[in-house]
Image 1 (cartoon, rainbow, N blue to C red):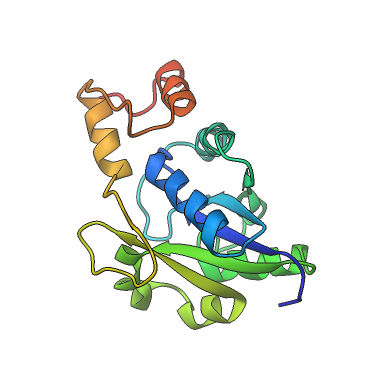
Image 2 (cartoon, rainbow, N blue to C red):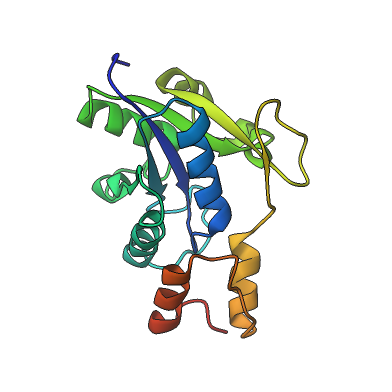
Amino acid sequence: MSGGREIALLGGSFNPPHVAHLMAAWWALATQGVSEVWLLPTFRHPFGKDLAPFEDRLEMCRLAARALRGVHVCGAEAELAADPLVGKTARTLEHLAAKHPDHRFALIVGADILAETAKWYRWDRVQALARVIVVGRQGHPPVPGAPDLPAISSTEIRARLARGEDVRGLVPEKVLRYVEEKGLYRG
């Protein structure tokens, strides 16, 4: 890693992006000394979960990012679409480090992810390529110096949308409008 600006990556399925994602991004910008936060939607879920089309999730991330100065969207995983390791954080970090040698990277993860790192491809490589920033999540052990973000779940949001329930307050307004216009996540 070089000595340039540090970019914090907030990766995920963003299926759909919700307000806790934005809270994590804002917290990292405000407290972790990073220059920017890049929302990084996965092209293909590393554990094979079904996702809305990548382009829709990328656009929803763009809409969500507009709410916060310093938050941007990175579609780098689409550049790795043909790579058998697409969706693996270590591979994405290698790609970004090669593409942006003037940047240093940090990776924002939720406390809920820490118990799963043994399942990750090359977690040791992830730690070598990026400073890991852990944000707390309600229902998981507290993280010293980090807030506990609300336990908002994209899975629950999708289920509520499929049942026709209201998710205002959980999803950025522009994202919700996009979901409704595209008919995403309807039962």
